[in-house]
Length: 126
Length: 126
DNA sequence: GCAATACTGAAGCATGTGCTTGAGTATCTA
DNA sequence: TAGATACTCAAGCACATGCTTCAGTATTGC
Image (cartoon, rainbow over all chains, first blue to last red; front, top):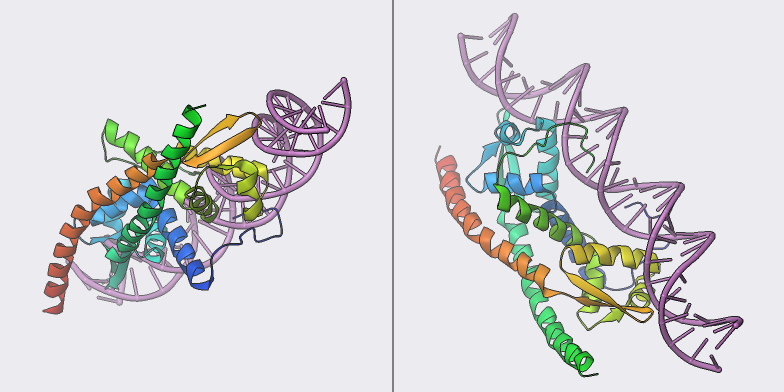
């Protein structure tokens, strides 16, 4: 990620939490690109070939393949080659992880919301 | 994003959908970085100053400020300067948007899941 | 007032990202 | 079996990203 420093710059999280951290980064990064989200939307209608994805997006087959690799690493999509055609489809696991992330963080954020309103009140009353 | 081509390469979505596309990109991109997720986790305990965030993360104040800008653009955090201290806090709007995205896409993906299993069956039976 | 504190802004650096082109390779199809 | 089709691989390019340093600027406390 292009750090100009030498230190790892991270002090929290244990071993297994680190694995999830990595997966979360892959997941959010994969979803961060509009072309990849468009691909997922297209695939949500059913499996498609690389060229079928490439054409409406106006990008090369190579670009689609590269996006697919990122989506596969994030467990948001899967693909397999049948003959000379690569068939791409959505995979729900990444989506499940996203739902889990949201669920896990909602409680924490709700707790924060309570604290926040308390602080705002405190602030307002001075 | 460093495209070497000239064309926009996007053909779907209308005007207002485009706005959401943009916001979704900001949101997912903001969450894609582990340091920013760590900042959000820290802030979920309550408001903190820039230096209070910087120290445990082992990064400079400047880096924290830069991350905060990205979190603020994604409506995941907010900050205001009180005296010489900038107070940073979580904002729920971005999180709400994320929940909405998940909800909106779940139905579509579930529909796809049905189609997928149908296709798999079809495939298996030949 | 004067130093310490808490940030801010501009610039720069190394690496990542999204995309391309061009040259393959494998698989159909006539 | 020749040619078309559907990718695949290796490079390379321009811009984005995450971080730094260094030189400010605005507040606060003595």
